[in-house]
Length: 168
Image 1 (cartoon, rainbow, N blue to C red):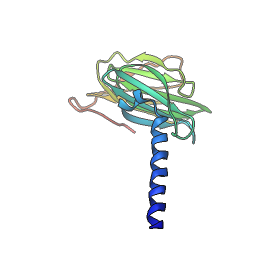
Image 2 (spheres, helix red, strand yellow):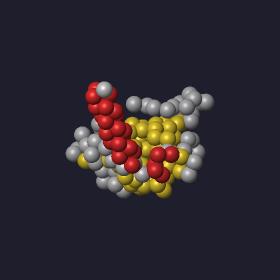
Image 3 (cartoon, rainbow, N blue to C red):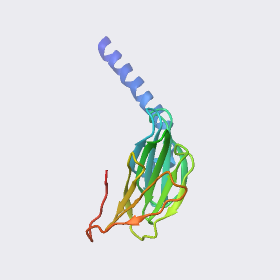
Image 4 (cartoon, rainbow, N blue to C red):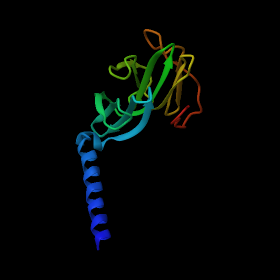
C-alpha cells in the first residue's frame, strides 16, 4: 500500500513537471511544422517552420529548453543551415516563394535575397569555404560566398521534375 501511494505521488509530480514544460512553450508556435534545426554553438540553435499563415524562425540560447521567435515575416520555410566561417556564424533559411534569408547576427536579424526563381526551395547547406547551395523543385543553385555583401545565385542544371529536399 505504501509503495502504491509513493508511486502515485511520483506520477503526479512527474505530470506536473511535464505540464510546466508545456506551459513555457508559446501556444501559437505549437501549430507550426518544424522542418529544420541548425546549431550555431552548444547552446544556441535555430529552428525553421511553416504553417498555413506563413513561416517562422525560432531561436534558443539554452540548448533547446526554451524558444523565442526571431521573425515571422517569412513565407513557409522549408530549410535552414548554419556554418562558422573565419570565426563568424552565417545562417540561411529557404522558403516556398524562392527567397533565401541570411543572418550574420547569430540568427537574430534576417535579410531576404531573391533568387529570381519560382521554385519551392526545400534545402540549404553552407560549406566551410563559404559556398552555399540551395535546392528545391527541379532547382539547384549556388552562391560562391555566403560572406559577400550580397548573394548572387548561379543556377545549375538538375534533372527536371525532381524535388531536391536536402543537399548536405
